[in-house]
Image (cartoon, rainbow, N blue to C red; front, side, top):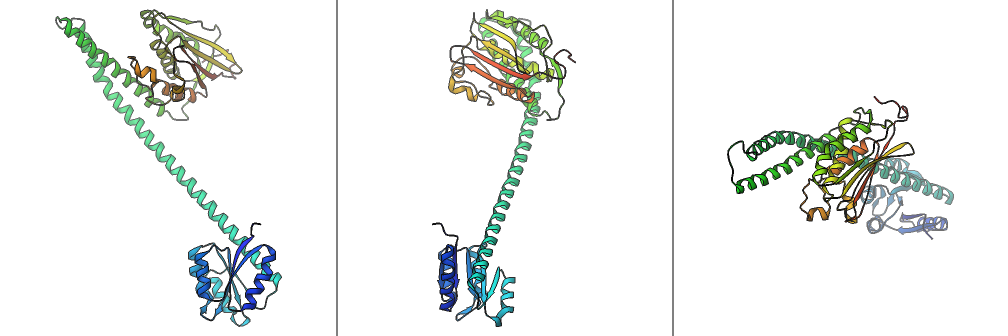
Length: 389
């Protein structure tokens, strides 16, 4: 049976030691005894005790001298002083130095049991208080670490935004000069020079794509939580995105399908954010769909939400890569093996925007069988989708 407490009695009188044992053992306490301060201190150091009954006057010293080493071992050990009538003042002094209580000789079994139970309850409360203090300290440390991480994340975003802005102008300028040369406006070029410049231009396209994605990512991270959202009709935005990609789809002989809904479909968002969100999903669908494939955008309603689905017949996503798609700079394994370029930032940006608009995004895909991205966003209930600002 589990003991109610581990008790040590340090007293030079055999009658007191045995009397304490007889009174406390039937109550479920595990009682140990020591006849001297030396033996008692050794037992405290060797074992774990909850409460010590300590005679104040011992042949080898005063029990009060054991209070400090006992509490060095465990500051929550409860010490109860056993004293004679002539040493009450010394017992009070012991309490000032850390003893919990004292009982005077002779004492009854009832007095002893009551004092021990009160002492053990005091130990339990002290340990619980200390545990709660540690939890509070841990919580305060977590808050501090969270604030520091947020500060560093904001610094990273601000730095990334600044660097990307500074890089975009010279890259765009250099690309403009390259295209001028490729069009033959700066003199004739032989075939080898044209080919080399085309390769440089392609790398500049990739660099500019990375810079633009970094700008979008940094901008999405730097948005203040209380920045206001507006009631936006998504129909014309999706139509504009489809129009923007129509030439690229025609170049790859991809069938691009979108059937808009006649009524306004209103969500709380920002226009720029919705353009970025839909552009990234459409761009991926076109990019990862081979010639002759198809890309379809559809709208549907579910409960109080609208679902915008981007479906393609492209290369698909391996199952093991799906959980990582929202990580920054992550690209699926089959994409990394292909010659298709990308930054691995687009879907991370999409995820942040969808969550900012209180929505959700789901991906359904299988390698070689195409992909569906389903964006679910709450409809504005107050307007009932018949008034759009």
